Length: 165
Image (tube, rainbow, N blue to C red; front, side, top):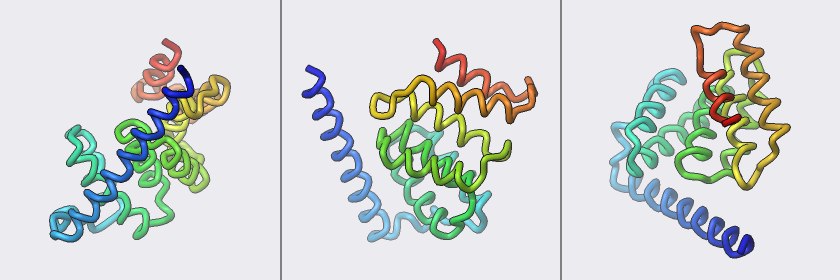
């Protein structure tokens, strides 16, 4: 039933959050995060993004460490908040936390520089927890508008097409 599915999804989400928190604690406690340092918002973004592309649970945990530290060190960087939101929306399925992170990103920067924030918000409103087709469509269309019909950057079009399919 839908109720048991929802309960199961919540339990899995809580288990994932607990796993990430324990992994974060172990990582910090044993000094394994020492190589996860960065010297600027941009280098933190690049490091966290490259870890996410590895695609393992360990890499997601390491990306969480990098982004947690980065948003505390660079709290006004919208791209870091958006990437942290992406991590939680796509990889750890922690949609409530992802929502807060992406909305913080959009609050900080609603320009073309933060186009990914709008794309991630579109995906967020495509999840079972936040499903609202109209809101998702608005976020995708905003990303396309911010792209100024620049077809050399195909991501807004690709993500919107994937959503529509």
